[in-house]
Length: 366
Image (cartoon, rainbow, N blue to C red):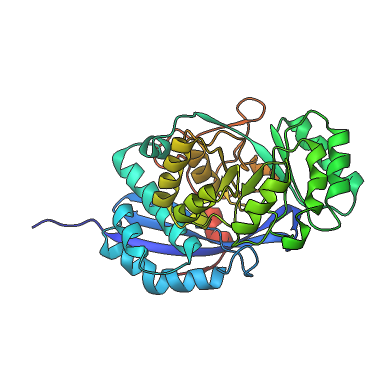
């Protein structure tokens, strides 16, 4: 008789205080409440992170809705698949939406799969880079002097690209002053959908700043108006929220809605969809970069493995650990050489979770 090793899935709801408040066009965060997922088969375990926020601001999904779906539907589904990530992702497609819940469990299953095979995740994915160029995202500040000071500190640390958050009233003049103060740095601007169809002409004011990109300026579900904007301004358009899956990426490409894409596994619902999107981007020469959602060390490790894929040619939104957290759940991530974070080379995500600290800060487990 064949005895199967014990299989278990458990979620942990946690809260980590941020080193510095992070403000975007839709709100300010001072701490981050999120969920980690642990899957176990015998002595092996894999970890994933659910990046859904408490409030439905970045997307319709919330931490509470993700936990409900995981407990009642996705955990049983993954167990019925024998914790196989491909089986789980195929089965999970029957449920509409909820990509962050799906992705959090998908990440954990792929970590477990890589550990079972004795390989680092980037080897399983077909990654080609051993270190990832690091960019930093700077939130909306109380004033221009504070913004310039923070950018200066990040440039001195060695970050290879700076992305500043913008919104109506904190955009054209701010970007102009940042470029004046830092004429050489690769610079991007991220609006988080703060503008509408009536702002197409206005956003041309950014053209003189030599930006790498203007990220998601318009509606979070839009491709059409972004295609109009792309024809009106010289600044390259990067899409984030609008590219929810490979199909949206293909439609946006056919409509000429973007020049490059920010890829977030939590937004796209799982590793399989990201790998298919990366293949599509590689075939058509679409530049990608890996976005961030203020992840803990678990999510940060996963992002490093993803950013090792060939079409991820631009600096990632993957910062040093000290950028966001005084203490993390994994060993800290830091530069190996100025501006570059190494991809972990151990099995799976390549880092271990501090279980004692996890237990200390867990608010609820399920």
